[in-house]
Image 1 (tube, rainbow over the protein chains, first blue to last red):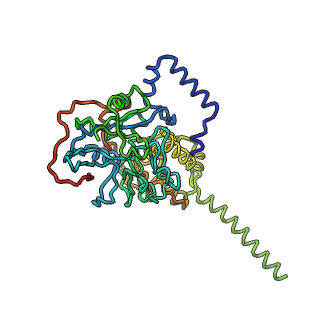
Image 2: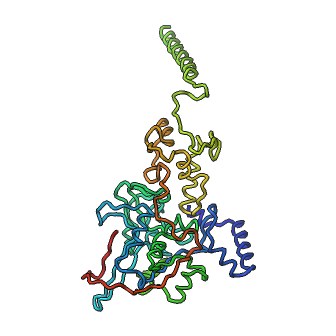
Image 3: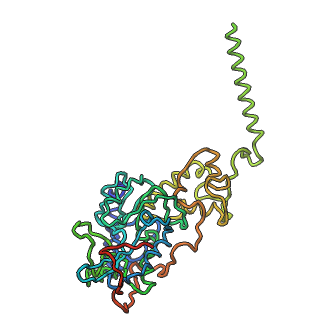
Length: 247
Length: 172
């Protein structure tokens, strides 16, 4: 699979370069606009985009779990009333400064790293990063060893201990495999926005922004340029796709 | 000599057996030419008489089409409907069907049970069409990526009086 991804044929290279050149020659704005459109269903994702999120902790309300509920509904995640082992793709975390007693609340999920440790350690290649930066588990080849869960510094992955009672057909999930936030890849591929971001917006907090961080015209890029966005555990040098403000 | 007779006897029995089997196959054949012992595979629910490829091709190679599509979708985000397992189910399993994979009435298992070929697709995939009301509603619909509706925030961080530890995670 990886060979297929990496090796780009001469014909492909020439045609893509020509398209890019043509698009650029019209006007930079036009080119950027077309990139923001949803890709056709029959085309592969490319590294021309990188999906990311910016979370403003000042807007994230303490006690609000709209993003968590939306994620669970969207992906059909149900609790078995065993909090320590239940699947969890996104969680709310409260950070409290011991000295000042100042608290901030933030959603924590897969950070969609550019150099994901989960991908490094996976013995089968099930843990993988798409060309557009979304980190996924290919459950067809996942053997459930849970190395990735140990490697992840963000505790973002869960293991399915029980048979899953599916409610949705676009997120196949099953017992014995590892799973985590997919950035709602099924929505993103058809031009949509992740459920958590929509729910946050719906709840009138607007703490989450989703978009293409490689496109300087996107809302997220503009916000990142203006306000910056910190990585959690930036010292690890993972270059996360999910960034935070106010931490 | 006795040994030769015994061998001839065995050969005759074999030939007779073969002839009988050939005739019995004809005897079981239904008017459409399908042997009556073959399973009744449910027809598409949309009334269509043609699959995405000719029927003979699908009978032999459906697994290859699905496998190829599987990797393309998973790794490259190609989400065409033609060879997707989801669309097989949407077309071949009635919405109100109570048949689940493993039952003889289910499209996939009607044949797989007969042929004795076990598959694990439905340990993760849905074996019936999805209830369209499931999932989180698309509030923003199809929008240019990142068109997050920015709304002014009335208050900053809500203060809490809980004596929490420095870090806590809450689960829904």
